[in-house]
Amino acid sequence: MPELPEIILLARQMKKELVGKTIRAIEVLQPKSLNGPEEEFAAGLTGAQIADVTSRGKWLFVETTQGWLLLSLGMGGEILYLPHRDDLPEKRRLVFDFSDGTCLSVNFWWFGYAHFVRPGELEAHQMTAKLGPNALDLSAKDLRAMLHKRRGQIKSFLLDQSKLAGIGNFYVHDILFLARLHPLRTADTLSEAEVEALARAIHDRLQLSIDKGGAGYEINLYGQKGGFTMEDILVGYREGEPCPTCGTSIAKIKTGSTSSFICPRCQPLDR
Ligand SMILES: [Zn+2]
Image (tube, rainbow, N blue to C red; front, side):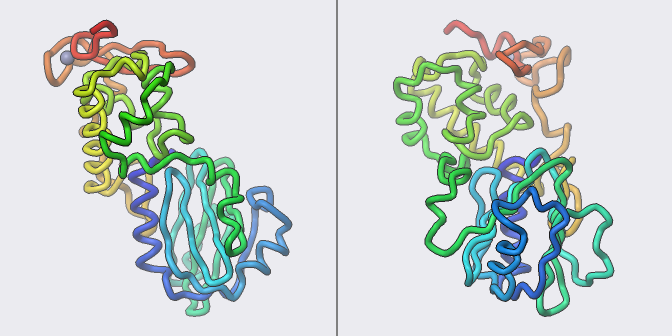
C-alpha cells in the first residue's frame, strides 16, 4: 500500500508532467470508484486544464481549471504517465487522455477513489476534509500539542489518518524504534525529549524513503520501482534478527489488531 513518501513522489512527478495539459477524454472502467454518476464526472473534467498537483496523506489532489480530481489508490495500485496511448497497460480502471496525445492511466489493485469536486467545494469533501496534517510537515511543537491529553496508544495515533496523514504499517515500526518508544505507550505520557525524538524519527524515516524514490514494492509514474527496500528497514519484519543498536533479538508482538516489531530492550513499555 502506498504511504506518504510514495504519494509525495507521485504528486511531484504528476505536477512535472501534467501541469498545462488539457483533458480531452476520460475512460471509466470502474464506475464505483467515482463519487457520482459517470456522466457527471466526465462532463466535469473534460476540457479542464491541469493547474497543479499536490498531496495530503494518501490522497492526490489534482487541481484543474474546472475543479478538483481527487485520487486515492486505496489498498494499492499504479498511476502511470504514458507518452502514447498504444502503451496503455492492460490493467486499468481509468484513463485520462490529454489533447497532446499523452495519457494518464490509473489502476486500483482492489478498490480506490477518483472523485470530482467542483471549484470551491473542496472543504465539503468529507474523505479528505477530515485528514490530519501531512506527517512530513509536522514540528515537535505541533506533535506535542496533538499528543496532549491523548489517552490512546502511540502507534494507533501514528496510524490514524485523521490525526496525522500518511504513515502506514511499512514505516511505523522503524519510526517507533528510532524514537525508542514502545508502540503501546500511552500518547500523553511521552516526555518532551521523547516527543522531539518521535518528530525527528517521523521526518527522517519518511524523508529517507523519499530520497531513495519510495518503497521498493511500489512503482512511480514512469513504472520504475522505488529504492527504499528491506535493506533500509531497521526492525520492521525482522523478527529474531539482532537489534541494530544493542543486538537484542527483535520481537514480534501483538498490539491490538496489528502486529508490531520492536527491540524489547531499546523500546521498553515502562520507563
Ligand atoms: Zn535494541
